[in-house]
Length: 338
Image (cartoon, rainbow, N blue to C red; front, side, top):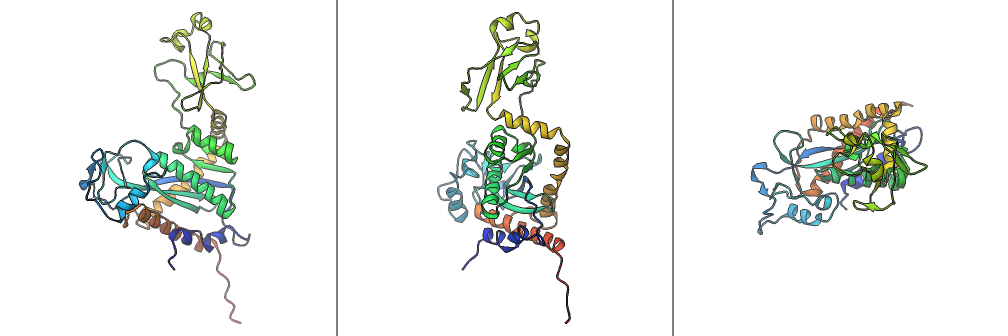
């Protein structure tokens, strides 16, 4: 009977990592998550304009797998944006110029790593965009809880995992401390006051502007029911000496606040603490794994096509990396000639 790559990865050796104290190398307290682009087996010169779509005669296993994942949040449903080009040989691969050079077709390999000994706990293949990588992170965390009974106390990640919704999911649904760089675009570049210049009072649920005036809210949710608007009074704004630095083009100032802002504040506090500085240093462990994957194992380009091919190659490569690590961490039994 055929054994899947996922079954191999979650088999005895990883369970042994999480087992008895004598051989336990997975701490299970701190996890790090990240993704890396791997070139697909698709010629960039043969790409078809995304708006035109695949030709009617296109067929094959990679085409069938592409059609099967169109509704998957880690692939086709990750974004509504049509890619600039589509590969007829591997349409699930995403056209990307993220490396800054020539664009290419790629998949993302997503790792969930225990930071104690850099053991890879889970792997997920996705299309090469940030939204899909966030979905993969959630899936891997939930699988680690379900399969290995690992409940991490904190998660390390860069700003790709710093959206309000993702941080809220970590804190409110799983009680995981977000050692994650907050993704924040609230800073203004026109010289007027940004949201960070306003002080939030948790007890009164009001903001105070730099002039000391309150901004209140009715509690109505806007922007996909994920944001609350706090408004100043027209009387306060018109009489304020700081109006030109606050809201020169509008009669009153409004400050948006995410429903996950409490979790985001927690992430900001952690980032400014010594724990945050330590976490940023530990994140290098997962980056070193990706460097090892490409430079030592030579997986800088896939040999197989389609989501299933990428999935199998990523998992088998991670298995090889874990076995190399275990060979160093777990002592060999002493030979007894008698």
